[in-house]
Structure formats: structure tokens, C-alpha cells
Image (cartoon, rainbow over all chains, first blue to last red; front, side, top):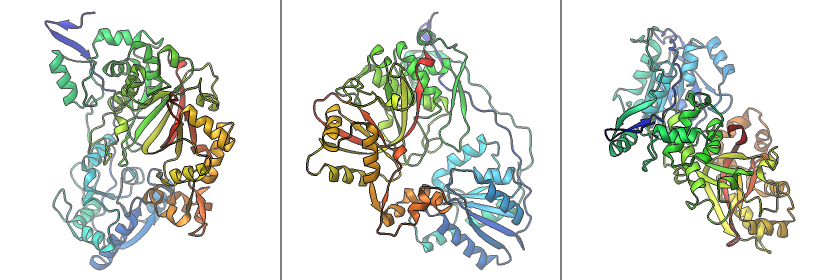
Length: 101
Length: 441
């Protein structure tokens, strides 16, 4: 098989095949946070817990009508945590995850 | 990633807060997971080591990328619908063309460089002729799916064929007879271009008859660039990892803060089975001596080394080296045959397992120091607090108590070197798996 044509070389593309992407829909937004319970999810990476405590303090000072609950992920941030997600779904209205990956 | 699951799967409106160093990575991950409209905001990097007052300033401050107040974006992310919240028809690229537009040698080198398909060194252009020659050294069909790779657990897998692996093997300069080794590496599912801020590299050890068949080096200079098979197999593993997993681009699909020099060629060598006093590595892992295998380790960030195993203080020397290692990456001992025999003479370790047990018993650190390491805080402490053993038991130790740094099954030994002297080193790395090369012949 000829590799050149008028001095030009035919070569193969080295890149793999991307996964099929399935679009996901988001949960409806809350409209207002008044009276809502927002979970602050600590992935336990670096000093994320200390950061989220500052977020909690911010809500207490600026939006006291919002109830915030600080919760740590059950293990390292690299693992899924369905037990915590179910708990938040059952008891909360929204979530803030940070800081992390 | 967790925010996407919480939002889409559990129907809980969620916003993620990241540091600004992850802007492109966050965009890429949300797009590839089908939620480019996911809500997120950024605070400055780093969070680690900052005081409460400094972190509060982050919260009170602005997103360094958008320039808008962080908490305003947090509240809007939870309360306001935005364009794109509703599911809409989206088209995604599903295939990669087989050929690159034909061009001159110089121009194609530049095309490959511009597309980040290389390790920034010149490559062998993968012409159809060269790729066909590579493919003749496996019984597998070119269009057979060879495996799947991704750069970390937050990314989705990409897929590739035997031919795609051959293209990358050619680019690395590998000879066709090396191809079964390279296919086995590709099929392992372990990336040599993992994206972690800690800057990993991979290490590859080959065992069995194929070492001699393809002329690999297990002796003098085995881990250095002095053998064609060692050098190009390692390079091929790196190139195929980045190209078959969807890229390895700093700030986007590669987040290693400092990078890792071992990643240039991937540390690749043959175990010196003939001069080793112990069982070959692959036999330790369930293979027959006549099987040809490749074993993969990842991490390779920390290395300690010394000469010889001294009669009087060898125990202290080894303990010092272990204490100096990153406590989160387990030790793999890389011993010149002279050093291996010295360990038998000094410690009576007539099997690798006996030496591993001694290392396990002697890699010790005060509990308070151990738990204070940031990597231990990030990756071990959460597992300990939720009861995972042996970490939960370690957590009960008093601050001054000496606790074991590693688990026995994390500690490994390989013999490599040409006996020009009794040097040896400890590589901080995690054993991933051993793969049959024979299945890819």
C-alpha cells in the first residue's frame, strides 16, 4: 500500500473513540431559599470542611431563614455515596458541594 | 461529578464550588457527563492550609473567573432556572476519523504536535504500511475492541481497537515484535497518563520468556534509556494512554500540578529472573514461569535509594528510608541482584514474602504524625472514621504510639540491575495488576 501521494504521506489518526454522551436533565430550581434546608456536602478533600463552615456562617449572618446542615461524605471523595444522597433527598431541598473535585 | 449525580439522579438542586485551577476540567467533565449546564462557581486556589478568616474572605469575595460574588452565584445556582435546564436535543461527536489529512512529513509532525497527540518529542508517523506491519504481530483483528481507558474516575471511558493501539505503538518507535506487550498494557484498563493533581507516572515490569524474545534489558541500565524495547514499550504505553483515553492536556484533562519526569518514557524494565534469588514477580501473582506477563504500578512520585545492606545498621537504614517515603504510596523495592542477596544474608529473607513481612513490621510512624499528613487526611482518614479496617483500628492509637504505615499486600519486591554494584531503591507506587502477554500474541 502506497504511503505517499505527490510527496504527501497518508497516516492514521491515533485518537480513540469517545463515549456516547447521554444528556441529563437538572432538578427544578427552588425559586427562593427562604425556609429551605440546604445541605453543605464536605467531600473531605484538603480543607473543604473548614471552607464549608464559612459558607454556613455566611448563611447564618446574611440569610438566617435558610437552614443549613453540614454533612461529610461517608468515605473518600473518589467514591459514590448513595446513602448520603438519599438522606439529602429525604431531608433537604438543595445542596452545595465543595470544595473539591 | 457528585453534584451531577445529586442533581440529575436524585433530583436535588445542587451547586458545586471548585477552585479556579479546575475551570477547564470542570467544563470538560460536566460536558462529557451530559450536563454542560450544571451549576458551579469558583473560589481561588488553594483552599488547603488557609485559615478560617482567609476562607471566609473567599466566601465573601468574587469568583475569580466570572468576577461575580461567589455567594450570589451559589444562590442563583440553587434558585434560578437558566437556559439549558430543560432537556434539549444535543448532537455529540461519536467517531474519530481513521486517517489524518495527507501532508508532508514536516507538516504532519506539526499536526500531531498541535493536536497534543505526542509527548512533545518527534514521533514515527503512523503510515498504513507501518501500522500493518505492527498488526501482523498479533492474531487479533484490527477492528477488535482492545480495551477502554480514562484519565481518572471522574471521566468517562473511551474505547479503542487493536488498530488504534498499533498506531500509537508505531508513533513510539516500537518494533512490531513488541506489539503483544503493548496490547496487553493497553488492555489493562490502567492509564499511564492519569489525571491527578499529585502527578502520577506508571512503572512496568515484564516477566517470562518474552523478555528474551524481544531483547529487553533486565541488567545494567535496565531502567534507563539504553534498550530499544524497554524504551519504546514504555513510550508507547504513555502515548496510547493519552490518545486513547480522550487526551492529556494540562488544565483540561491533566491536572498534575508539577508533572512527573518518570512519565516521559514510563519506567519500563524486565525483571532479572535469572540473577534473582527469589520467585519471579509474575509467579508470585499466579502465573507460570513460562508465561509472559506485564505488571503495572502507578504513582512513582517518591523514590528513596541507597547502596548495600550494611551489617550493623541495615535495619535502621531501611526504616529511615521508609519513614522518608510518602506515607500514602506503598513501597515497591527495586533491588539489584547483589542487594537482594545481601538482604538474604543480613535478614535471612529467603523468600520475598519474608522480606515483605519484615518491611510491614518495620515501616512505622507515630500516629499523630501519620494522621497529620495531608494525603492521609484526604484519602485514609475518611475511610478510618467510617470503620474501614485496618484504618479504623489505627485511628484508636495514642498520638505517640507507633503505627504501621502500610499493609503487607501493598508492599512488593522486584529484582532488576546488572550487578555493577549493590544499589537499590524504593519506589513509592501502587501495584495495579499483572496481565498475560501471551493472550495478545
